[in-house]
Image (cartoon, rainbow, N blue to C red; front, side, top):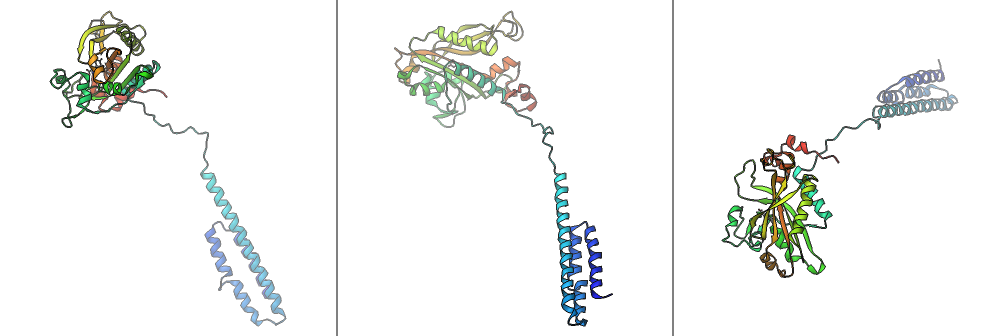
Length: 348
Ligand code: DAH
């Protein structure tokens, strides 16, 4: 067999081998074996030394063309294998966008936040502004400005966490009253505000007492505000929260910053007023404190008490939630038991 036949046979045999190769690594090995220094093509070319000088260029050109063909076959197969590999990968990583997703468990606002949000919406609708005030408060605003001087017995009930002589954790959102009053420009219109937030009192924690709870303060000051305005406002609020059939009644009470002061009861939402265990068979449930703002509170804040007057109220979102949902332990709101909190899941 002469050299050219040998080369032809080499090409045939290896073309088939290359076509049948399935792995890129194997293809590399074939290339090294075939075209490397010790490969058959090189061997053949070495044999050219024994050839006639006239034969040499012919055989040389032929050998080169065989090598080119082998290279082309290797390239082609490499490309085919690459394409197959990509196709396999794509097939494996296909995403079915029509498949239902993994459900994500959505949280919900805390029930107390829901009550505060709902009341805020209600009062915003009546033209009130929402005031965010300080939880660390000055004695001055928490007590003095509210007509509770240092020796006033009303302080005893609200003995609290003092940070120093002047600073304390506020005991009541009423502290927001004087701060807002001081700043209000009555030439621009009446003052109507609510101020929700946390308050603190030194208290023995039990089912109905917590050393930390929430209040929402309300304050309306203008000319010619009467107790009828207070009653109408609180009736609308009570009906919004506890049901459209509710009634309210005012009982005389005492707060240093209001005169007269009242305790507000709402007719029982369970029995409608006939008497049941929720209202302790009285037909009424106490829900908040209120009154006509004491002239001293206005004067201290620099407001002319002969011209302006109004009402204030203070309600407890914790108490509202307990009543509305029959929660018998205020501590449930603060111990973060998800099983308890999830009962108040709010859609959307
Ligand atoms: N600050 C009072 C308290 O913590 C609640 C209160 C009562 C607020 C009557 C008022 C009000 O604004 O008019 O016990």
